[in-house]
Image 1: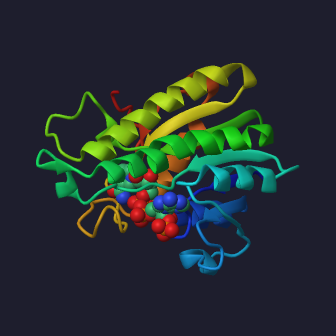
Image 2 (image 1 turned 45 degrees about the vertical axis):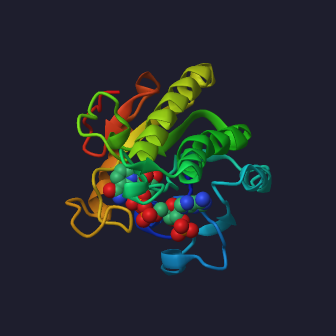
Length: 226
Ligand SMILES: NC(=O)c1ccc[n+]([C@@H]2O[C@H](COP(=O)([O-])OP(=O)(O)OC[C@H]3O[C@@H](n4cnc5c(N)ncnc54)[C@H](OP(=O)(O)O)[C@@H]3O)[C@@H](O)[C@H]2O)c1
């Protein structure tokens, strides 16, 4: 069976990815900050746990090294943060350190993880990075969420470069919008459940061909404008 790596898999959308791929018989390699705190993963059978802190490049490199000799069919860069509390990333003020942490986790880490895993990705492999519609420059008519929006726009651009650079290697690189999802980040009023969001993103990932590499898809298959 194919192997999937999922970052930030102890809760939320990452946990649901782990549940669904494990239920379908995939080999699931799940990363958490601290494997002694697996969160919801303790209820998912057959998952292999690894440590990865997305804000620590050395941790990311160590994860890549720990997978020596393993072949990965799909990398899901899921770990992400909202960044500073919304009033501290607004027209009223910016928390500079919080902005930089959001950039590190949401924009830099997915590229570092992909590059650390490159030796394990053969032709036909896919990299799916969970971005957000809030990173669409075209669709931002309402403002706010400066750090989060900027970090997701940045990863969208990073993914375009990755897709172009790895095209000849046969690796398909996508960015995905999961919808507004009922998680700790999305809150209870979100209209989309994690099972529906993840089922949709899995369909998009499965259908993606090399010709789709560098695209920005929503969980329901819509293309999101940059
Ligand atoms: N929920 C939505 O409506 C929505 C909409 C658009 C995009 N997204 C994106 O979807 C992805 C998953 O979001 P979610 O809703 O599932 O959020 P969540 O419930 O807050 O879960 C975030 C996950 O990321 C992990 N994480 C955060 N910072 C990390 C770090 N420095 N190192 C390692 N892991 C880290 C968390 O681990 P800990 O438990 O250790 O913190 C957790 O597993 C994110 O990229 C988010 O931006 C979500």
